[in-house]
View (cartoon, rainbow, N blue to C red):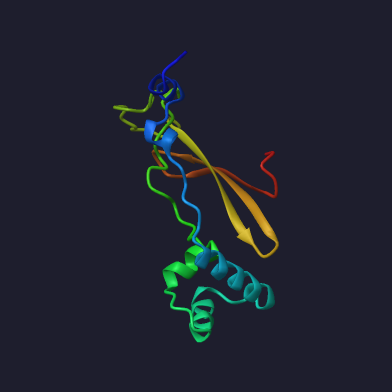
Length: 146
């Protein structure tokens, strides 16, 4: 039999994660979630500020942070440490390190970007000469096939 600490080491998780037991929501929070759900079903345009005001008018002492958490609202933004690479990921060398770029057609680069339109996206592909910064080629497409 393998010990718990060895199992956690093999799975690359902390032992505290193994022993963690999530706490259940309190009965008051469950009742608040039910009220929020019923009100949101009637008025789906209610956000956190209006929902907080509505609950306060109903006699509940809540703050906006609690209502936001109970509604399940979360801002969409890059979370910390998103650029950390996976430990098993192969790192490729940067081939241009230390290279002096002193004439045209020595180094080209390309990039793909998307442009939002009213009914979707178009993709812009560009090839640029690094020395002159001249756009050698570009193409717009509605798919990434090109």
